[in-house]
Image (cartoon, rainbow, N blue to C red):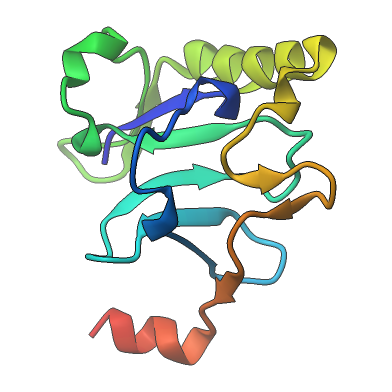
Length: 138
């Protein structure tokens, strides 16, 4: 799965925001945003809006080439078994730089995912318990 890491202030909804839902696999886990009309996964965010981070499913973009080249790969299979990661420095730089700059500049407040006054997601988070997860994997 290809993910593009960015900050929420760079995410805009022109239409369809009313069809966005959110779930998590635990009360404190990552938020996973999806289209509630068809179940298509769209974004991941952290639970705290001050930690301005979002990962966009590249497959959902109209023009994936517009975001530029892939700089990092995780869990790349090795011929003899096991996995490796490439571009770890780019990954970590992006993971730290974007949210830090958004926090310093105040851009973290410009988010389609959270109501800043309350600090809560704009949709009620559905917690998927372990039993439901097991059913989904069957």
